[in-house]
Structures are given as C-alpha cells and as structure tokens.
Length: 379
Image 1 (spheres, rainbow, N blue to C red):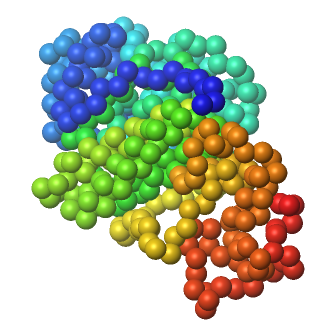
Image 2 (cartoon, rainbow, N blue to C red):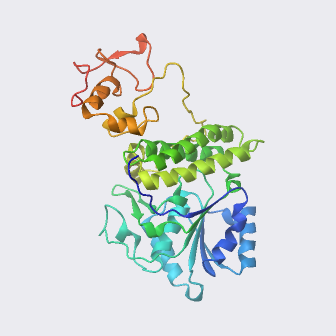
Image 3 (cartoon, rainbow, N blue to C red):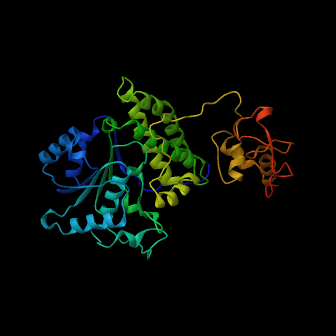
C-alpha cells in the first residue's frame, strides 16, 4: 500500500430529514447567518420549515439568491453587501442549493473578512495573490446530487465570453465546517436535472478512480459511490415520485457526496478539463443528458478487462486488474509488454483498432491508420 494523505473534510450530517438539524448547527457557529439559495427556493415548504427553525433558534437571517454559475462580479457584490450590513453583518454563511449556490456561498464566506475581490485568488488569471483568510464558518446544504461541492475546498468562478474563463478559488480554509446532506431536499428535482447531475457525479467518481493520484482510501469511496450510482440513478430518473424514489435519492445523494470527497483528494481528469474552457464560452459546462434517459453501459460477454497496470503506464487506472502488491512487483519491462498487448485500441499481432473494453466482431474491426501494430512512442 502506497503512502497517502487526506486533506481536510467537513463534518458530515447525512440522512433523510437531517435538514431539520440545520438551525441548531448554524446557531452553534453564530447568531447572524447569510443564507445563499437559488431563486424560488424561498417559496418552498422546505425553506419555510428551515426559516421557522432559524427563528426558533434565535438566528438572524439575511438571504441572497444565485442563478447560474457565479461570476467574479456577483461574488464581489454579495461580499460588499455583507460587509456593509452593520449590525446584521454575518458571522456564518449557509449555502442551500446546487453546486453554483454552494460555490458562491463558499467564496463569499472566504472573502467577507479580508474584503478583497475573488478575482485576486483565481488560479491562472488575475494577480494570483495568496489567500490570507480567515474564512467565516460555512455550512453546505446540497439540494442536487451531482457536484459534490459540499465536500470540496474550491469554488468554481466563471466569466463567459470571448475572453471568458472558468477557474477555481481554492484553499483548505474554504472547506465547509458542516455538510448537511438531506436526500429529502432532492424530491422536487426535475428529470433533466436528475440526469445531468447524476452524470456529473458518475464522471467525477470515474475520473477520481482512474486518477494517478488515487489511493486505497479514495478507491474504496469511489467504488462505493459508483455502486450507488448504478443502483440509484436510473431508478430515480425513471420514477422520480414512485415508491422506490426515496431510496434512489438517498443513493444518489451519497454518490454525489463521495464524488466530492474523491475529487478533492485525488483530482479529476480530461472530461472536466475540457468542460472548463467550454463552460467559459457557453452554457455547456458539464455533460448533461437533458431530458433523455442516461445510458449506462452494462457488462456483457464481449467485454474484456483492461489491466490496471497498463492504464497506470498510460497515466490512467482501471477498475479491473491485479492487486496493489502485485502491481508493485511488476518491472518496467513487464509493464511495457502489457501495454503493447492491452493498450487502448490495439489487438495483439494485427494492425487493427478495437474498443479498449469490448471486442468487436470481424465486421466491426477496421484497419489502423498506422503501419505498425504498436502505437508510436509506446514500445
């Protein structure tokens, strides 16, 4: 087992009905709360119940609403209003909503005390100043099952247009003090949101599992999350209000939480790397399924496992393959041999291309554009 370290995580309160504990949790962190939500949430029975709890606990609440991914200007405006609130200046920030709401609340919590612009701390743009803190206590309450922002240390900030960007404000001090994950808050999600968020969680779990930074700890969580997606996503999408919906929502809330934990520890991959520049230019931010049913491939007799060692040699990892101890014992020569044999798209002894997972029939096999059966640079 290789050495690993785990970065800061929030205290996690998970389960149906746990949002009832939110007022008491917030009161333990402060008396004045800035609550960031999505438009329309203030008219829901869930908010009326939570607001009543805040009043009973003696918490003074000021609300802000966020629609769409936060921009630097939006975050800075909320920070300016919060700092100028006088006696109502918050001492705790609560985010109740999807990933954009949680990222906004996270960034605001980190900037109310220092008071500078979020653009000062974005990775790869602006002055890149180190974050000096401190951050106000932040409580994350997700109402979607996808981004896992309740468990991460970064807030994604976007600016659209020709010179747009999608960058992170990242620091361990931005991690939520408490994440309250109540699957009951997902009950009103429409099918297109279930599909899009579910595919986001699935992608994050897959990318974290195949990351070269993954370890035994994150692998265990990722596999558990993938199993929850397998059992929950289609069941919830197909019948959002049926008898099995509550259990399916619970599985997807759990999967999304684990996806956030895993990406915070092991990182992501190419899908999210491509989503950043695309999201800066348009509203195509993450792979979304719209109203169509998500298509999750099933394992068939045609599938063949890809060696985990092979994919590590290529900068990736797979769910199939050998044990960690056996991988360690393999030499570079053995790894290269396996890579030539099992590399994505190559069959042994023939210059043909195949799917890295499934063996196509003879009619599906096509000739490689290369003259050699071994890809250039992989020998």
